[in-house]
Amino acid sequence: MATEIAFERLMTPTKGLRAEVMEEPMTPGKWSFKGMAAHLTFWNGLVLKRLDALHHGREFEWYGETEFDRLNAEASGRADGMPLKRAMTELRITHSALMETARRVNMGKLTTDGQIPDWLVETVTGHYDHHRPQVEAWVARLVTEGRGPLAPLPVSGE
Image (cartoon, rainbow, N blue to C red):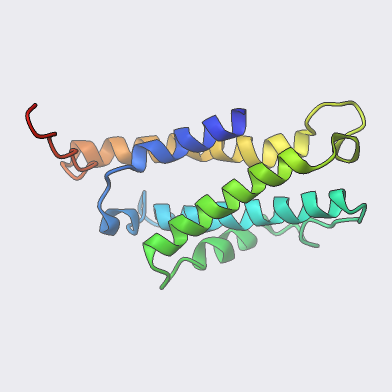
C-alpha cells in the first residue's frame, strides 16, 4: 500500500539517530522529529475517528475549526516533556491502527466510486510525503555535521 511505503520512507532516515538529536529542532525555530511525530499522531488520530464514524454511518467534523497553524502547534507541543520512545511508539501505533482500520472499513461506506477518497490520501499518504523532504534534509545536515545515524555494529566474523 502506498501509505505504508510513504510511512517507511519518512521513518527510515531517522534509524540510528541518537535520542537527543531527535529532540532538537530540525531547523532553528521549528519542530523536532519528536514534535513532528506528535503532530502526525494527532492527524492520524483524527483520520481514525473519521474512519470509525464512516464505518458506523455517523457524521464527522474534522475538528470544528480551521486554525491549522494553532492545531499543529498544539499537536507538536504535546511532545514536550514526553519521552522520545513514547512519542515514537504512539506514532507507530496510530499509523498501524489507521492502516488496519482502513482495510476493514466497507468500501461502500468509504466512497461511492470504489476509489480511495482524496481526503484519505491527502491526510495520510500526502502528509507523510509532505514531511519527508524536511526529514531527509535534516538528516543529511546531521551527517555533514558528523551527527548522523549511528553505524550498525559489525557482525562477528565479517
